[in-house]
Amino acid sequence: MKPVLLIAVNFVREQRWPILVLLLWVLLLAFQGLVTEMPRERDDLLFIFKQVAVYVVVFSIFFGGSAIYNERRSRRVLAVLAKDVARYQYLSGLVIGVTMACGIYCFTLGLTGSWTLGQSGFQIRDVWFLMACLAAASALAGTVALMFSTFLNPFFAAGATALVLLAPAVLERTVAHSLGIVVPTWELTATVVKSSFDSPLKISWTPILLAIVETVFFWMISAWIFTRVDIAVAVE
Amino acid sequence: MPGALEFENLAKEYRSFASRRRLRALDGFTLQVETGEIFGFLGPNGAGKSTAIHLAMGFMRPTSGSGRMLGQPFGYAPARRRVGFLAENVALYHRRAQRLVRFYGALNGMGGADLEKRSRDVLGAVGLLEHAGRNVGKFSRGMLQRVGLAQALVNDPELLILDEPTSALDPLVRVTIRELLLRAREQGKTIFLSSHLLSEVELICDRVAVLHRGRLVRLGRTADLLQSTEQIEIVARGISDTLFPGAKTENGFVRYAVPSSSQRAVIEKIWAAGGEVVRLNPVRRSLEQVFLEVTSTQETATKAEKA
Image 1 (cartoon, rainbow over the protein chains, first blue to last red):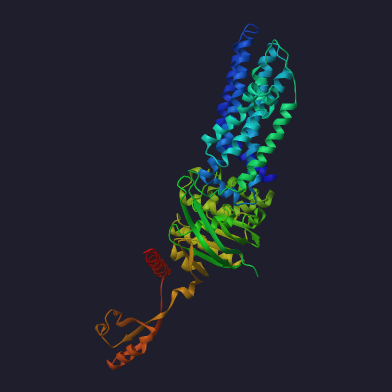
Image 2 (cartoon, rainbow over the protein chains, first blue to last red):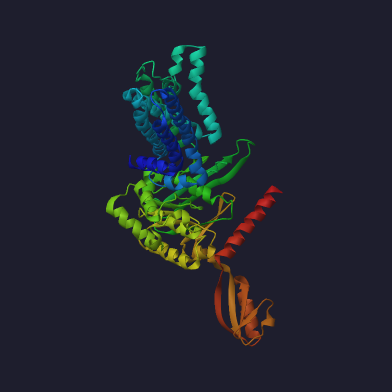
């Protein structure tokens, strides 16, 4: 477990600048909270909150999709895998690293959201539930991107991930409503986007649990593929 | 007793996805590196040296064949805990040197005061202790290579696999690293050294192997390879060097290299001319000469095969 955590923390450290840039959006939300005239502009504030929240899912795809590619291109992966680190442990480190990076964002956004939206009547408990939805959605999105990045370059990995994550939305509309939860990132993100001051939030933990299970499932597939990849070959 | 590193009929073929072209980087490669020796792994660019090393480290899967590292199949992660590896183009995270070495040590299960002490010791051994607090992102290539060596040594490995470890180092540091490797051998460690610096290899390696186009074309003890059994240098005095075409005069002595089969005739000719034979030396070639001879012979054979 120690190497996994070391790789995860190292991933977050390597991504510290993109994470800091992301946190600037949270800062923007906090600033908005300071200048907004409550409760007249509370819907605008919620709109910004939702917008800033959804960014993390997109960034998790970038984090997951580029992690292996960057490590292989820079050849830094060789020094890590030359140690007592199995490929599945390396991928576990990256999955946890992506989740930690998104978790940091969700946590700070949760704090800011609790303060700003809490003032305007939004249930603080609901803010944290939405953050749990986001964290689960981004962990799954990042892991799917990581899986595709084991054999595709980041651009195609991001594209393939978008297809997989958006497929349930299409299935929901064309085949059956229940299929919307097959890969629950869409469902979880929609929960965040549809939240409002007027209608009470329907709290269901099923999509979150499903997202966690699928994150493990996609991690296992990633590990299976990555074990068979020649990592010393130039990625270009 | 099993070798520290064993390649058994290993082959590796690279396939280009787009053009469906195939490149055989290694072909029927068999080699055993014994425990406690410094083994030189030579070959021209593209010979397959790095491919063989990457297969041993488990970075790649062989197309066919197998291999063992410290008694375990290639790619078995726990075996790497006893191995130190330095890649050809060192690529490390941009952290302070000592933290970086500690990070790589921790990946190998080390920790606590032992890791702290060991990281300082290895940085000292490669001459970087005074730079231990500096970020390696600001290091020169030579310094980076030394940090790379430090991270390879941090776990006190039984087997060191080094791909061009001294290519970017200045002569002074090169001597330090050479002494470090010789000390490691004295401690019973095995060193597998891939290098283009043939003079270095000649100085420290017990055995060498030459790889050419993925095939092992020469293997032997360094001393045996350098010793030419076919040529004898005859040192004589009291004669003119014009007696033998190609002979040279140095400090009053005439030196002339002849095939060992014809030495008797030459010696008799010297005596007949009133000269005196002072010494007979078996001709010792440099590793560079051996390398060039082997690779050019192979190149000619390959061209003839193609024709």
